[in-house]
Image 1 (cartoon, rainbow, N blue to C red):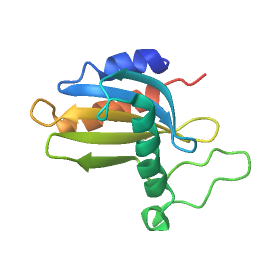
Image 2 (image 1 turned 60 degrees about the horizontal axis):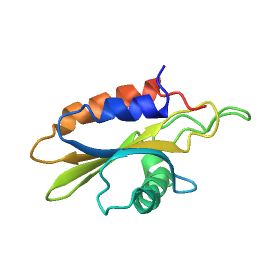
Image 3 (image 1 turned 90 degrees about the vertical axis):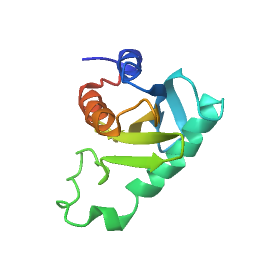
Amino acid sequence: MPGIDECLLDVMRLPGARGAAVVDWTSGLALGTIGESPNGDHEATAAETAEVARMAAEQPAFAIGLPDPPAAGEPAVPPVEDVIVTTRAGYHILRFVETDFDSSVFLHLWLDRAEGNLALARIRLGEMAERLVLA
């Protein structure tokens, strides 16, 4: 089971990967980063993407059709699996990570539009999120 650094190295092996981070969406802090940052500052990018993740995760409209909230002591799971933001030059994929504690972490992948494969990246990011071990 890979930790944050191993997971980020794995993410950067995806075709077209420009940069990646593991971010806590409640605080906006980057728990780990690799590669480039869209605005040149990994910490600012983490804070900005955390706002997008938090906005998506907290919207009741995305929770329709989900089972009842978890019982006391069970982790809360965001209703959203991932968020994809498309720009002219690339894609930003925010993949939520389910954890044993509060599930407030996501993987952010910045993918070059010309070189990357959005479908493949989304599938692989989901697999990595399932294997990620946060200690």
